[in-house]
Image 1 (cartoon, rainbow, N blue to C red):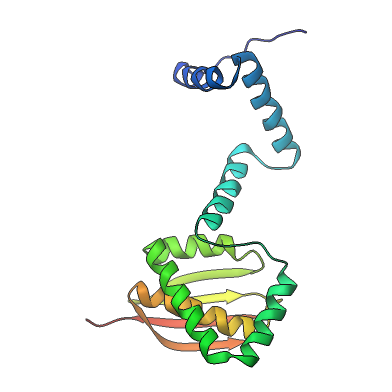
Image 2 (image 1 turned 120 degrees about the horizontal axis):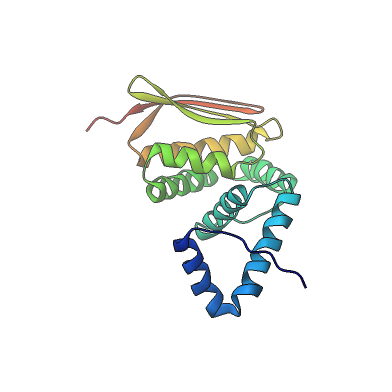
Length: 183
């Protein structure tokens, strides 16, 4: 089989050599790495994009997210919201508090949720004076699901130092204004 010499920075070549030593030969490991990069590129992604995607999945898994078909989640949320509204609102609020605590600041929470909420066409938390305005657009989301999601957002923002000033939830949209908590 023909070979070709590839140049690399010395520090990177040494790290790859260390990894390869634990996994077999340098030749086999570098060829495997190159094959995987080619496969990733053929999917229309860069290696950096693939890394970011895997990081999102790992992060979601680490904090307890699971993958379910959207239609199931929407249907269950709608039915459950009609049947047991009060306890579900409290559950979503409490979970939001946990995630707010876990992510620790509004910007990180926004970044992560923008990634996790795949079906949204928009998710942002904009500064408005000292407060924040959260907007979430999801045309496929049921009103029951959006109402529960709103309680999740309120719980997170509560932990992050904000109280709800106004809230508007309708088919496909959540818009909540938050003001800083006093004291």
